[in-house]
Figure (cartoon, rainbow, N blue to C red):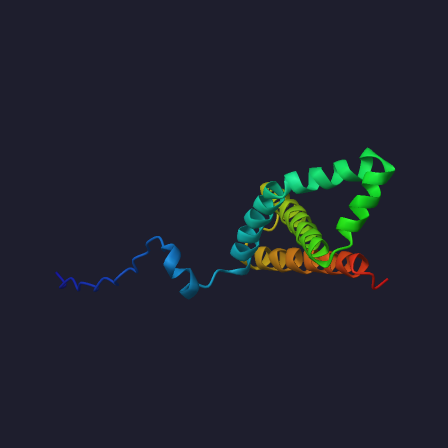
Length: 140
């Protein structure tokens, strides 16, 4: 009546460990991770350039002479490029923030929906940035 108990060999489980900064070039983040990373970068960009934005705002509303000076500064191609970077930062941060709010409400938490919403954030933020960039550089 007794049967020999057959032992099933155990599978080796993969070892996971944190990656180092030097290994980031070899690591491929999923799209949701890229959006999360860009959300942090855009937030830092907006924070770091806040003094520039406040200075430009102050120049634009102080007087007519300072507004003319502001127009001269704002017409330079480099300032327009920095402005476009700020616009991208705001659009990316806003769209990713809305995505995170929906995720906080437990919508779109599964892998496929999270990937689609991350792709949507990238498409919407880059499209809006491109439209503002076209307006900023005088295409229309």
